Length: 272
Ligand code: ADP
Image 1 (tube, rainbow, N blue to C red):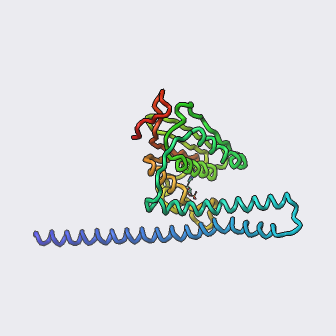
Image 2: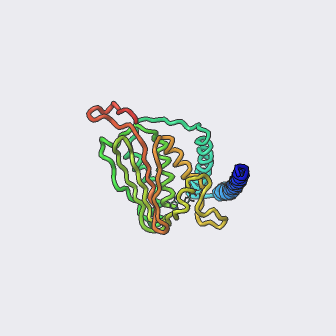
Image 3: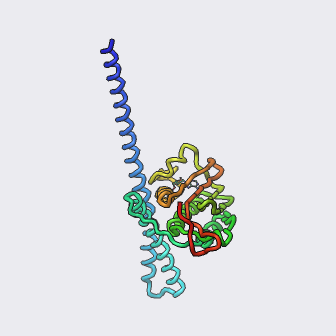
């Protein structure tokens, strides 16, 4: 009878191994699929600005172009080149994050300045889509100055706000900020298309998009959230999502920061 148990155990082990192999194969297949969707998407993302650069550069070659036009065309070329650069930078950031090559550089940072920069950067884009971009609050002066990695924090907020505008077609985007218990907290809330529960985890993985078909309605490469999560974690913080499909999404960013000791503006409290 002992022998029978050994045989049964063998069979169970074998079944388990088979299941593991199937799972691994499924994962490999899915990652292949993601990679080719990414290549197709990124080619498209590169081709659009590239075509515009080539087209307008040719127009610039025209000898009797009025000054006005020349200026206009060169601005379009510069803007499209910026878009290309942003794509390349995203790909570089992902690879630097994954190989641990991104270093945290903290210095005195004015959170209110970051908030108003975000507003300036996106307000026109929101207006053009007929949606409101609201900054719910600025911080009292004594809380606004913290010690953190300004450019990384800004990049996180730019990615999240850009997405909020991209995936919202009516209503508003509300950005609020607070500083408490040695932590800066941002929330970016939109009234956009929302994200179904089954997609809420996956979209933080690289190349992942809710819609990655060739007929998809929204551009992008599926790297923005991966970068935002990676940067947040690099700064020791957390990025959480709350969303209802068809209603909207809220992204919550928390990052530990050093805050000034009251009464001594130049000394900073020890970081947690
Ligand atoms: P990209 O925007 O380039 O597709 P991201 O990594 O920034 O890449 O986002 C991944 C996916 O998550 C998006 O394609 C979209 O499906 C979903 N998503 C992100 N932000 C939002 C949002 N605010 N509302 C709805 N869907 C979102």
